[in-house]
Amino acid sequence: MYDLQELYQEIVLDHSRKPRNFGKLEDATGTGEGFNPLCGDQITLYLKIEDDTISDIGFEGVGCAISKASASMMTQGVKGKSTEETQRIFEEFRRMITKGTDGDYDAELLGDLEILSGVSQYPARIKCAVLSWHTLKAALNDSLNSGKEPVSTE
Ligand code: ZN
Image (cartoon, rainbow, N blue to C red; front, side, top):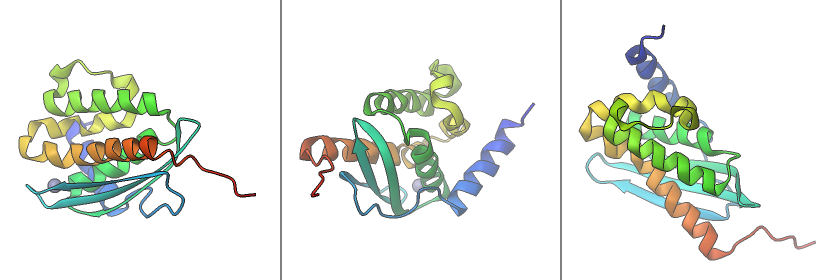
């Protein structure tokens, strides 16, 4: 069996050192900005929505290991998912991160993101872990409201 604590530290470290999907998307349909004043974490999120699905996602930012690892894992978790599914993952993630294993969350839906359940034991870090998700929500709204569906000029 995995030592969850060890696995958690290893994966958080790995994602914070080598964040996945790091960088700006030039053809984003929506963007979001997030800031966690308690820790100083900052994130800018770029989304590309096509056919109601997140076809591409990228982020830039500075912050602590948890905020970066959470953002990196989130981008992996929602890429290729529909906006509705993404919303559901966000709700389950929030339940997991605030209530921990008592939260009765949908582990199957969360997949690898469940590794971050350990954060629930550190209340001061919860905001670091959910920052990218709130930013994702802002970017989703931005994309939906702007109506910037990718257009073909050809
Ligand atoms: Zn932080």
